[in-house]
Length: 104
Figure 1: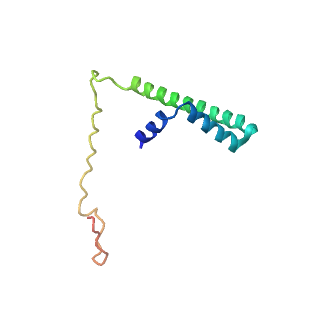
Figure 2 (figure 1 turned 120 degrees about the vertical axis):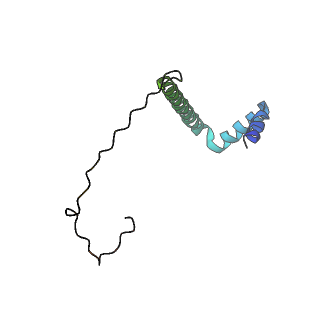
Figure 3 (figure 1 turned 135 degrees about the horizontal axis):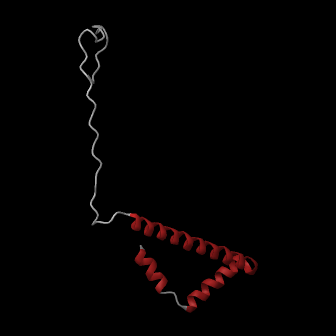
């Protein structure tokens, strides 16, 4: 699809552009054409501003990323706490009629 669009734009010359301009002029009229051009200009300006913002954000991310030469230090994992075993007398009584838990 991008090739088709590029081929279409490459084939446009001066006469074709004048024909397109005349058709747009007939459709929108002379009074609305400046408003249309102003809106189009604002849209293009906003698009360029947004593209520059994205580019700046990417550059900032690349600058703040750690370099490949810097050694990577990982935090040491915390030692899990060991809980003392529960004595048989401290365990709650088991109800033989209770439904079985599938996860235990």
